[in-house]
Image 1 (tube, helix red, strand yellow):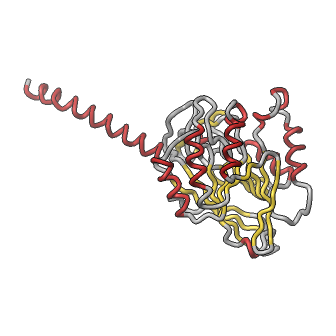
Image 2: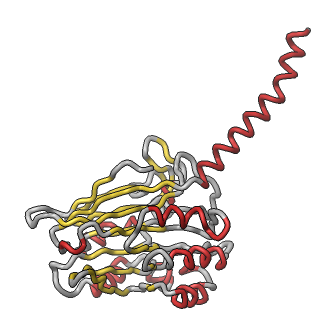
Length: 299
């Protein structure tokens, strides 16, 4: 009898301890930000851009990382970026919080020039016009099917921003021809200029390759939400076991990096898939080399 009583006495504390441990794990998995670091080499880059650092932020979805986004901004500052690029879904159309998004933006513009292209949640949110106005007033360059030149010591590269298909009329959102026309119109010009594309959707990699993009930075997939053996479980636009949920992907002469993003939307939890910043370092390579993107250890 005493053994049975002892087991009962231990059962409740063990269950409570297990629940607390699981809660701590979930909290760490969903709030501890990691940095994925990549290098992109191209013979199209002028020596002036050798070592140029692009810091990508994607899929914030209103999430906060400390008061005034302090933890997130501190991590970005530590990477010493030459520019910060935001690849969509700063807000969440289901529970829009402009204040959280703008807290991050006001801190980011003090660290480096910020460039932004909108995602599907902005395309579905009635608050997007207010967000766009706030971004521009804060000094952010908003790219909606537009390109600009980033200049450095007399050299330049082109930065392109492709709006999410959610901004198109309902009958055009699945029209790959329409998307290709929009991107192709931005690709006119000298073919020896390095072109870096900001676009929310990684599943459009074949389109980016057809249009001749050198490098694309994307998000949207949330890392597949649950990751097992480096494979995501589900991503919007790709379904189960998505092909493009994280890391580097190559198609032809086009390289793409997919950020796992920072926040969540309809499904609130991640597993083995911590929130992620992406650091991309551009490097000059010889004319005989092709564009490459290589992952280094994430911290």
